Length: 438
Image: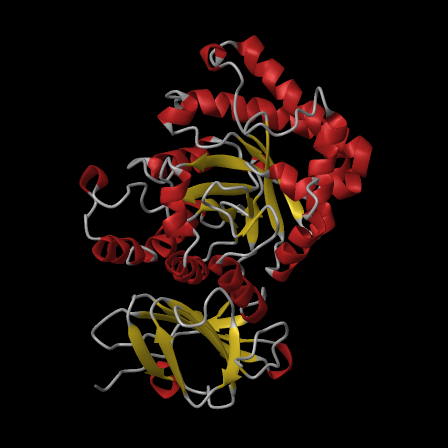
């Protein structure tokens, strides 16, 4: 069947890779395999690591500063920038009490002051600070309204500025929110009001979250057939692009970053259920497709939920740094779709949207194409039908149902064959740390 080739305009790769390190923070920061974990995060070019304060059983900076400082130092040891999230107002019933709001803002400001004392203002001024986590989620925040959130945000912003302003030197305060949950049908109202009702000098980024499902097969109207359910989930990855574009439109010309601060395939309440989606080859293909669509949509940062994971069903590696398939696909993205590269997104018009493609052109003649096969069936693609100019890409790197939990390196004969869900890169670079078939 003939395929048509479209030649879209190249765009700069602006997406910074990141992760959340929250539920399993101890293994990330202090566990026996922490240095191996840090090394894996570097392999994924992790530039931002979102950590929590006042929630998720993370160290309390007020009562145990030494432990909390170790948490932040682990982020710095990776070579990443912390995004410190003041995750939750501790007394929801007092959210309308000005004294309680002021107390919370002072607690947040004290964390900033302590960070300046420990690491210096010239370092801390470049960190990200986030107010609250999913305030629009009734289960988490108890029905908080935007007006209440705005009062808290503005009070916290003023408290942080009190300590950071002497060091900013014309830089913008990297404070943001509202970290809205994407299941809520009116999530965009929060983003619009956040950008339009708060002084832009107090906003460094807009943070939004997206999982596409939370139901097990057959639960709450989900298909009983697992294959159908997975197909319905996989075909929603373009939502990352459409939401990124919608947020960018709201932000307009303002110097405010567009951040997908939390995402993964599935958020079922039982770890073993969500792990089937998140920590499988299906989740790896979904994740690569989601990243591709975030790039297309113009998002400027993403943070997967999560990096390290002790049996929670989300992470790209476990507490012993053993990787999941999604680790390998994120590493492929990081190695071959680099910040600042020129990207193009050719469309494979085959009557069936079974493959996502991005072509990357970088310095010193680097050229690569990343392919994501979106179906649990075998398929072969001719590179000449996907994009022009790939004949020089003689190296093939692939992970799919036939490779197991590893990336295999072979020579490329002009075609790429997938055994089920998979991700592949064809490149003119010499790869490193890939398994060769025996």
